[in-house]
Length: 181
Image (cartoon, rainbow, N blue to C red; front, side, top):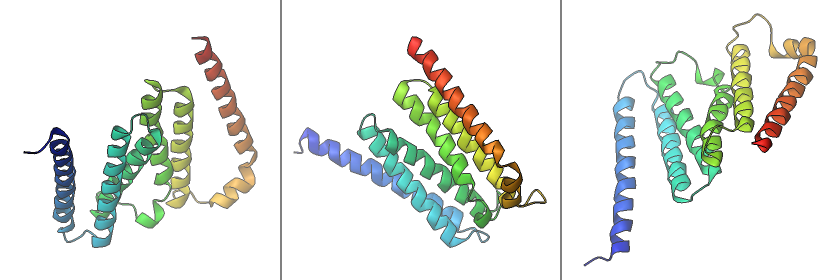
């Protein structure tokens, strides 16, 4: 007869194996489609498994925001690569690297929620900054405008100081208001 701790370990291993088999099944099902790149589908599967592993660590190790951040980031990247491999998102993977910035910004929101029980201003401002930066870089990466990033930076570099200063002022004002509460 197994003890209670052995049954709990067995149940946990069975649960994790079930999740992995489900993801593997989805991966092979989607990968069996002819237009999908096998390498991209396998990479997406690895990212989803790594994200699930980080999510399990975030749940198991209470208050580990770093694991939650990487879980969200890896899962979003894995889903995005699946969508690109299936050509649902018509963007070449080589031009979509700025989406990592967008995913990083979006992954900060649950981290702030878990750390503070609500969306904390520091996380919200940083998240918005990463998302805006990602979309701005995506415009240049996809060549949606007629000039390059370097020519834009050469002309508008003082705007970076303005945005950086504005962000610091917002963070300072919001953290003073939160300390008074």
